Image (cartoon, rainbow, N blue to C red; front, side, top):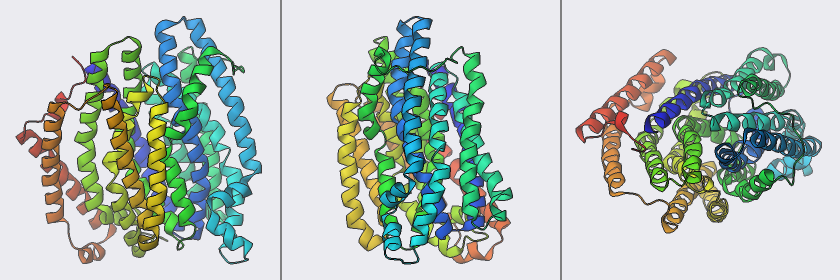
Length: 519
């Protein structure tokens, strides 16, 4: 089991790496085209709302509720009953998402006013910022249907994941990145408003992602005719689990939307600076945190269904240790190399050094919460695999309310950086509450060996941070170099960090390749 989990995790990480690399290319192209001005703000805004709903209906709450139930059907029920469940889920979820999509397209001005309050206020008062509201309303009509396609894509991916086919769903986001890159290179430059071309890239990216999954479903014998099944026992169980999870699993996304709402009242560029820094945060989060969570949920669900208590604990332990091993150095690296990474990746075209400086502050604030974000991804499956979605909801409510309060407290003195810092602090609170709940329910308790493991990893990551700090050139030196020289130095710094970290791990007795889940 240990080797299978590690192999699955490596597959997901590799496929995610390809997707994240193309995602960085996509963001580089967008930054070169639009920088961090008002056009970029509106595009990121119009793209964020359907992505938020995607987390609710697709990758987030639905997957957390659907995977455990599907795993139970595959372990305990016949293949015909499992196919019937798939048909009912596809029909019911598809019907609901179709309705939501239609409402979203028709009510796009209301959504733009709701989440972009600052722009709507300017529009009401005939101020220049009102043009952002009008453009956002129009672009939402193009980007919102992405929700429909990505929901079925996520459904297909969940089915394939429960059958051990992790590579397909992990690779699928590549097509969205390719579609946006092509739109940015060949469509947007020929339009008066290039952001509209990018919006069409989002739309067609969703179409291609959906179509890509179909042959793999057919091969697995999971391609079924959707039918409405609101009262089907399996659907009832999924929606019972999903309704509270809609909130609990999407707390971080709700926080980010609230950040966007407040940022619409701040200076132009705030939404873009938060976006670019969040994208760099998502790179290690997706590569490590989400990859580990993807493979751990089906494994934990199977352990729970088959009453393997010891195996459940070992799997949780593996997830926590893997997160610590990868998350701590990634967190230190993001904070220390924030400005060099932004320089190398984005400082060209319309993206200026001022944008680098502004985005680096929010990246450091987000980076301080990376370990918390990653731990949430592993701790939450400890509840969802046992079909307990209510407990994380309570913790999610506490974290969200805390985030709102911190946003209001920190936005005035620190602007958009305060928003990023508030998000990181609320993530820390959420992760702490999730662990405390597992501990109190006697589901999982951090072992003495994991505490020792954490101490050794923290020591090694601290040495790595010292190496990066020592050899990082001054800002004036970075600015005097060409793009090629900056890129080469960044690679050398990352390599020095990785080598120093691995050497320290070996010295303190940790062999990363021997990390185990179960005996």
